[in-house]
Image (cartoon, rainbow, N blue to C red; front, side, top):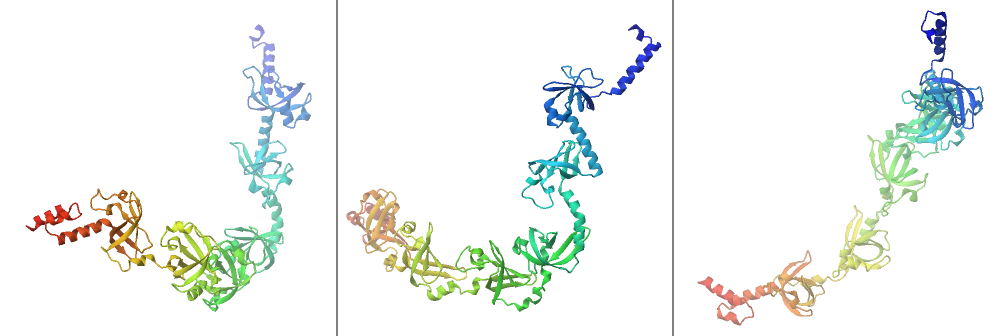
Length: 575
């Protein structure tokens, strides 16, 4: 090695130049793509020779097969690899063929994106929001949004799967290494020249015959014309009447005549109108009168009613509430068909808002008015139970199709109303009395108990503080349940009203069946309320005894335990 110390020696200079030239050729650096020549193949691995490396890089054969490089697995073939590490912890060279391919592929994509050139790819699978596209040349994967698959909605894209086709690069994220492509842009550019020729055929004022309704949007309706171009009818150009959404007037697949009102050759758009094919009906809206019967044609049926046409261009809403007098939540679908001509009455005309309201039920006699004429208030009639809920019955007269309301409290004077309600079922015929008729509210109320004598009339000749005889029906901790003699109603004497002395105010003193006297403490005919009290009667009798027997000794023979003390107190007050 001594010879190399002397650099002035010709042999040393020659070795130095040879070494520098060899290192400059290799330029081995981590993170760069290098080429290696296959010099050995085993069952699982491929060994490469790379000039300048101290050992041979190794590749997995399966990696090369997955990349589609199976044909290159031959002695002497060159393969591009990414040099990840010149020497790992085991002292081996670490390379990757797939990463090298992706880097090369990304460079190709960047070049195509900058030059605005289409690339060849194939749709390999579906994913959330779109599809995955594989770049045919490099195998790089790109995202195809669902909105960019075609220029029209496609329910099935199976015919596009794994088929080589052109895509446009519309977005490239160099930091994240993501690419987004579009098939729609390729199709649109292809059709653009043809579409320009089609748009040139139309002029403002042209009439388009039998254009088909293709779709809706919040701002208008799209029509397909001869399967060559789609035109827009703006919301304001659909009808002279107010329209909130195109589906109020049109059905998908319908055909209508259109008038061309605008042609934009730059945007390749054609604007059309439906309403301009007929004169503005609001210019002669004065010809229509309120509360007069007209014929209207059913144009569109919705859940909330039907849209009808009084004349071409004059569309009006027939709301479901104006379909029938008697049927609630009635469906227009069950009453009419598209194209039917029906009678209607105009209920409102608003020229400023360009709105006309109509009613179908007003063309028929109001059954509530008919009911009032035939069955005025307090009329008793036979009615059939047609429906029932937890607190009422609905009944109907045989000759008028109207449901009348019968509350459970109007079933009986005696029992609990809800208990009485359980005795009735659909189909039962009962006698009822008309209690209330509200024509404007479409309500009729009837009662069953009002057809029978009112047991509360027993109290008509009675007054407060009057003594009556009652029979004890039963007792409980709260008091006594009693029934006045000759009356059919039961009442309660509260525990606190049994006696003056609390020791005697015990319901348990009575077993039931006894007859006792009590006084009427309260009587309200409007509220049908009566309060009975044994305590009040005792107080009344005590007062009468005090007024009649003023001497102290005389009170000792009366059957009142406290009378003697009361008389004594009264004598002291007189002194």
